[in-house]
Amino acid sequence: MSGPGTLLAAGAAPAAQPAPLPPVVVHRRAAGGPGRMLLLHGLANSASVWDAYLEHAGQDGGPEIWAADLPWRGECVAHWSAEGDVVPHVADALRAVPGGAGVVVGHSMGANSLLEFLHRRLERGVDPFTEFGIRALVLVSPFYRRAAEDFTWQSVETAVQNFVRTMTEGVRVHAGGRVPDDLVEELGGRVRDRVGAYGWMRFFETYLATPRLRTELFTVPCLVIAGEHDSIAPPEEGGLLAADLPEGRFHLLPDSGHFLMIEQAGELAAAVDRFVSTLPAA
Image (cartoon, rainbow, N blue to C red; front, side, top):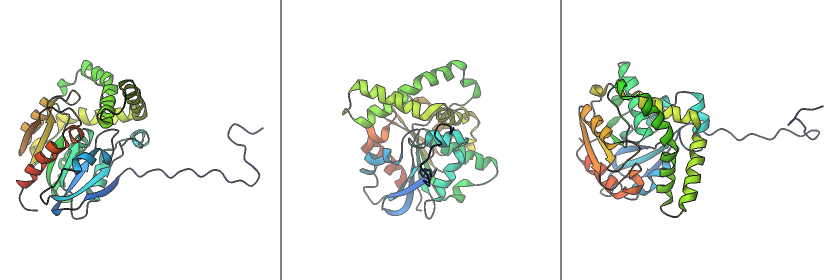
């Protein structure tokens, strides 16, 4: 007797399985003047999280803008996070921008994965800024703690408990009031379950790694931007990170939470454009 799932019509071929999505896909999103910018999204988002931001960015001949879909995007996170370390895939995104990545903008897990990747290269004695043509960093809503002792069991427990709230906040902000609150809660739980334990661990590993970041070796200009009312990535952590970077600057965006590129797209774009305008010519 055939086992479950083994019955096929005579001569029939097994159904073709869909090809797995690649871990990194990079798209050019906006033409521009000289220079380039690469956008990296956070956990369970995708390159589309930057759509509102792109409506305002580079209004005065800013750089050409590229956006990456990363292994921790919504439809891929369960697969790629279970494969192991996803941080090395940051290199794939950086290499995909013709002529060098230029100004790299990372949000949330995208910012932390970028920091961790650059740290690893610097620890090996490699200059990743020259290697990938990085002129500057913009770190939006990053997570950062200075000392390993800052991570207590209570902080880990709180992070796990707050994870569904984080996913729900993402759904709420994306919905823009078009979805009832009870459905927002339900969808937030679904996103949490899709991310799964491995996806959450990949994020938390980058957070746990922040005390050992060799921030003194980050020699390019860095802008850290935080939302005044961000209850997910505390804005004071962004302030500490900016203070520890040799060319770090900190900007607090009023009346905003974690998803600045949606909640305050125009203000975020203006802050980034001002920062880029201060950089040496590409």
